Image (tube, rainbow, N blue to C red; front, side, top):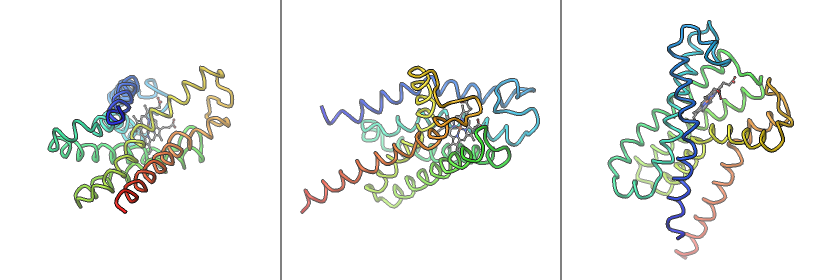
Length: 221
Ligand code: HEM
């Protein structure tokens, strides 16, 4: 049973991101083709073509990335079709760079709705995403599978981070009606969320990776 746990968790994760993948892809395409992008969403401005394009492209690339990363990590697919895993891995790397850079360009040109605190943490998230994707590919090319696996775990956590952010909001609003959150994203809950959607999950991943490494060392001693 334990053998199948990663497959089960990754499949449930991929299926649950479905609604956000469709939402993000649809918003990105409409933002890109609309003559009045400000009417599509508050994140687009009617002027500011570069910031709009950066954000719209990041939504489309990010949508594929959110679903693609957990699917790419499925153990059965990795083992049965290593060539596909390799090719799709390069694809995910490009998507991660486009998603991260698109978001970073928007932050630089436009800032974020929540101000400097949100802009800072979203920028950290974007840089971390590009860094994790780069290391995942780098260690795969260097045939260092232990490091490749560790970076791939961090990368999957970051790739689904944007979906986790929305899930935290959905659960919090259902449970409390939105205590500590407001439309300007300056409430206590909003300010905690810009860190809480990825940092704690990266820490949990780190603890599990270290426990696994410890066990491996022990069994080799
Ligand atoms: C992981 C895949 C990602 C997806 C699917 C995604 C999707 C989205 C969507 C749909 C929005 C529009 C807001 C909404 O309607 O909810 C958005 C906003 C935004 N995203 Fe992403 N995103 C991803 C990753 C990132 C990354 C890595 C960064 C960091 C550079 C980033 C930066 C931003 C920024 C700055 C905004 C606008 C915030 C505001 O002022 O409201 N996103 N994203």
